[in-house]
Amino acid sequence: MDLKIKKLADNAVIPTYGSEYAAGADLYSCEGELTFAPGETKMVHTGLAMQIPVGYVGLVYARSGIASKRGLAPANKVGVVDSDYRGEIMVALHNHSTEPQSIVAGERIAQMVIAPYLTVNYVETDTLDETDRGTGGFGSTGTK
Image (cartoon, rainbow, N blue to C red; front, top):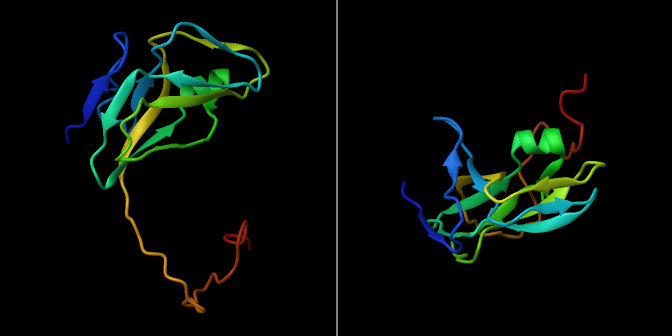
């Protein structure tokens, strides 16, 4: 599938896959050096806009290396880029560590997975079909 991308900044980097079967394509910062204090969140520009096909969504996730080694990950855990959005893709990057962390232009900051989704009609009802699990919630499965 081809996905149209528009560069909004000269130094923007087109997303890349780290391996042949990677699900997520790396997103890159296009800003100069940014320093994040512990617990601080900043919006990081990618310099890119995309035309995600109807019926698909761009899901922005943390990159495991930068998250586990430096504590930098999307503040909203998973960003959602809808197919009708044409603005700049930005990542709300949060420093979960206890030390200041910096990133530079051209650095991989997150990854995006393009995935299909369903739009459903939410229909109110007074009853739901019964299941073995029933109303068992958090921690209710696999406890014997």
